[in-house]
Amino acid sequence: MQTKIKVWDLPVRFFHWGMIALLGGLWWTADASEMEWHQILAYCLMVLIICRLVWGIIGSDTARFTHFIKHPKTVLEYVRKTREQGISASIGHNPLGGYMVLALMTLITLQLSTGLFSTDEIFTEGPLYAAVSTETGSLMTWLHKKIFYVMLGFAAAHVLAVIAHGVKGDKLVGPMLSGYKQVPAKLDVQLTFKPLLVALVLLLAVGGVVTNYLIWPIVDML
Image 1 (cartoon, rainbow, N blue to C red):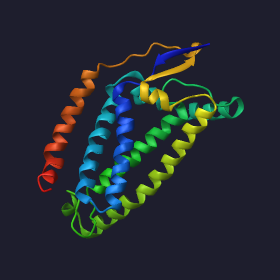
Image 2: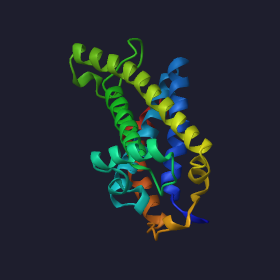
Image 3: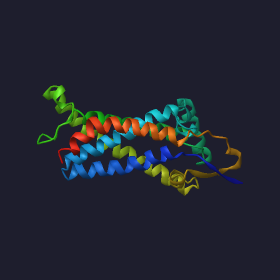
Image 4: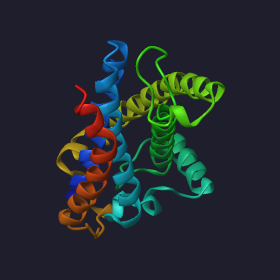
């Protein structure tokens, strides 16, 4: 018997789809050498990442890192059980998926951090490029370019996992759109969701600082 429950709040869903849209835009702007817009989109992604990190501490139950970052033994047990019994539904990220989320967020944070010290060696430099040596700037630029391909690999693995779960009946895309998921009745639990106003205040606070110091100076030059 199945029951429909809320598993994802709006802030988590906004972060998920916003991140995908921004990463696509970042790839296009870099490929088209639209570096001013590349920087603007990167700073927008920075706002999302900072908010998600904070929300992972103070947010709703399924958004919190403590909910989906499990002990490695738990992950290994989940993998063993999945190999023996097949894919089963879970509320929020499953133990293995939690580490994928952590890996992707780490890679995006590294990508953003290296970008601050990078240069396209033509017209555009990151805001902290002048604070480091030429050698360090070159290293950060190289890392910024290479981390992108590592991110693509992890993203591809994530998409394949989502497809595999969908084929086996554990739908993941729909819940990330609507917030609600059909799960076995035995998994029905009471989850706590933080007020949307808390997330909005957080977004406005972080967005205001990043816009004032990083985004607006670039917009002012367009």
